[in-house]
Length: 181
Image (tube, rainbow, N blue to C red; front, side, top):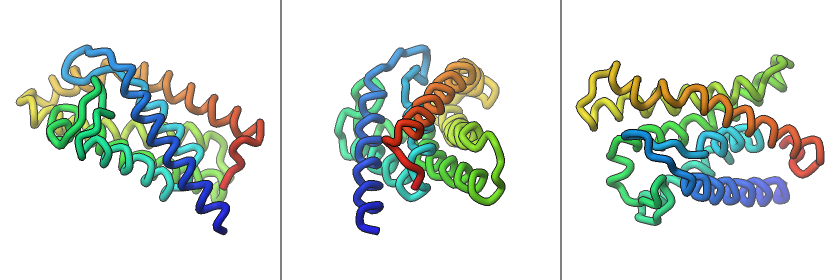
């Protein structure tokens, strides 16, 4: 039991560090930048149980909230969480454990194929569901304009990043580097 707990903590910490690193790749394209963060959040949902996935994302957001420059554009502080992209960050905290839970249920109880795709979809939908309204609220955009600025341009790219995360997780599982918990 201690091995599993220690392993979960270590992997959660590594995922939180990967989130910070993935934010360094930030391309401003409007109020919401393109980053590699969705790939890491999906990976968290594929290699951790819900509690570990939540811990990883919560640790990342907490580090940024206290001012460490771990958010996109090397920013940190509560202002980022209250700004146009804060909802997406909070969506990661909700989406990673939701995706991990959906994957676990699909694999163990339903024996359904496509558990990884379901997890990725949960992550992405959660991020959009939390980020889109905050983007509209903070910027004063209409819902349609916020969707056009903060969701529509990212759907294809986020699907590609999710596919990459699924590929990484599958490879890690095959090599034995990450056995399912």
